[in-house]
Length: 266
Length: 265
Image 1 (cartoon, rainbow over the protein chains, first blue to last red):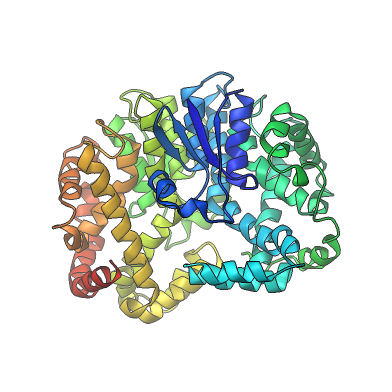
Image 2 (cartoon, each protein chain N blue to C red):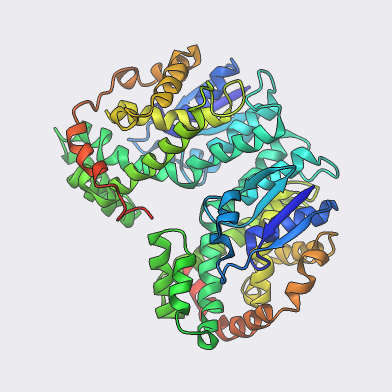
């Protein structure tokens, strides 16, 4: 039996749900309410001491960290394979799959705090200020308050944007030869690892970031056309399903991107 | 044919060399002198645009990133297997191989720098500080390095670094208390991923901080030193002036770092 502890809007959870859906594996749904701090309950901390989602439990065996979970699923349930059979392509796949863990995940967090999540909180900010006040990690709390107050004007949020610019360039360069997926002939853990992040940009109203990169647009459309996408994304966040809820932010973001980012990225 | 581009002191390079030696895979070594800037030449950048070591070139395919290289070697040369056979063991292994990539390596290298490498500034030519900073890939790490050069053992970031080391060693102890090696009953990439860091903490004498609390880590290190991959990877390094300086400088910093761990715990 597979059980998944997850949260609807978590990018790491989206990644694992997408892998599960592509393999058509049934799983028991433990939907965590992060706003009411369910992740800090003693029961969950035993499964996941870092108090993050997702956690997979397979016949009692606990597997943590989304990238590791995805490899685990492909090892434990090899068909349909989510890894290229060619070993050189497989190494390329692992380079892509590492990108979220190295840098993009942090960058995505900053963008989401300064953009999508902030927009949802602006009308009634007090509960969010209360939550920040309770955060035991003061450094994170201060950064979140700053990003809530300054939005995309915050330097961390801008760093986040430029890290994504770099990734989009790499993806475009790879996809430019007309291949449908990042590595090999079929969707792999490379695409699965990055789909939630590019989707988050789209939902945040930042799709104009790849207006000059048609291959990325095509790639994202292919992802969104998969039945597994509806299963892994839309089902859990219907509000973010297909429309960019952050539409309207582009006039604010465009001048930031035009500055080139040379002062935040080297 | 395998060509391996590396810098002997680099922990990420040591992982891959240990693996190649452990499996007995023949390879040609190409030394990249980071101080001299070999990594910035057009020839090397053609292999890795990010100008980082190591790079493995196998039948014309150039692959950077030590963790990805190790999995590739396992895929291409499956025997003797250094990945656990079962999915659960592999997942355990991959949690360990992620440690250096997700902050562990940076934390260790800032420690080694503050304790030892920065002292090499004294016998270096003018421009050494600038060269040190230029080696770092981004502005954040350059700034961190600048603090480390200026403040040494008084750098406030050191407390966080020692907390990370403390957690890693205690996590190792907890795992090794229930199994022979980090990912299971057999030696694997999980062990190899941690070897360079534990060996160097030992070279700096700092591992002694955990002697009483983490005895299994010491047994593990003794067993690692018996592995086939150890001698060819470390023989020259263990006799090097770098390791000798690390031992002297680590001994001098020991009391201060031990108290940081004790107050942080």
